[in-house]
Image (cartoon, rainbow, N blue to C red; front, side):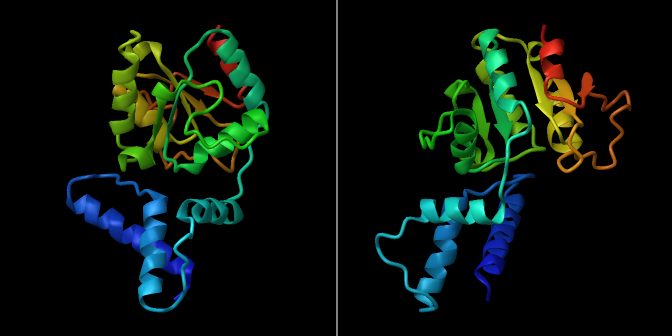
Length: 218
């Protein structure tokens, strides 16, 4: 069996098991999944894995080769401008441990594996792999709301920008956040047959360029 097929089958099984335990949108920790997948092959003598094998590095390299990513134009400049306005920056994302590493590289040009992200407060980073729950569950949004309430910020003072109506805009609106739908990239825009102009689902703004955020928050 191809290792990629075994990986996807293991992820599917874990998701199904957690759904049976009442988690509607479960997430996995990719390091733990790779450990299970490769160890199962080691037990069957399909492959040899040295004791010094680094599952974290393997997962990172596998991701880079199979899902290459690049930043949106002007991302660094816009985030820097928002930070210079003394705005609090945070992230709510379906993500794995390598997401902060990649974002740090895009923002600073260096590889930093600290878990934090340049320009962002560690207290305001909410990644699905940490909680084993993902969007469109409102769980991560509620965690963000709870954290920001200590500043204090009320939900309507929080502006969430996303490209997915189902996973971003609707759960953010449900939590009480202001929302912006980024519709400037056809490859990443996800409407899911949800009408962004409907009163029930309409974001507070729709933008086609990230730089438009700077106008909205002025």
